[in-house]
Length: 139
Image (cartoon, rainbow, N blue to C red; front, side, top):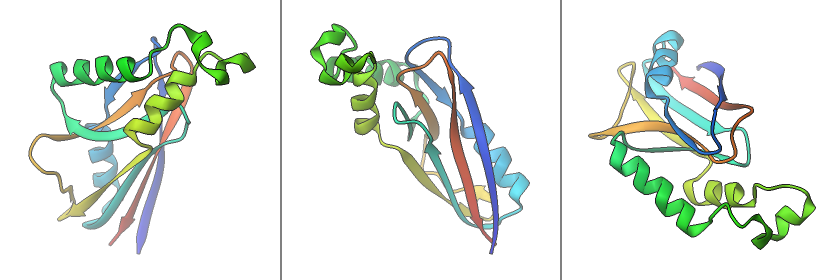
């Protein structure tokens, strides 16, 4: 079995951003030379997420509105976690809803997606450097 491990770096300019990382992951699959296997992508921070869905701007805004409705950032005093000096309790909750990681099959050297599927890195407490892990295994 062969493997490739890479770390994608992100430094967002706003608190919440949704970044399509599909092409970056596809490049890594190609670089790995793996024809049959699995590709794991996970956020390495507890206030970020990796998920798969449609790359449609209306849907991305719907996600953002929905998450902000479920766990609004303000007022920050509503969260006990923020009483420790943090202001990102909402980001932890948003990450819990959206998940930590995805796994995509590799078939004939390509990510084996369903129609419209794309990989996203979602940042909920940005404006500083963060990472996602890409681990590709197979033959």
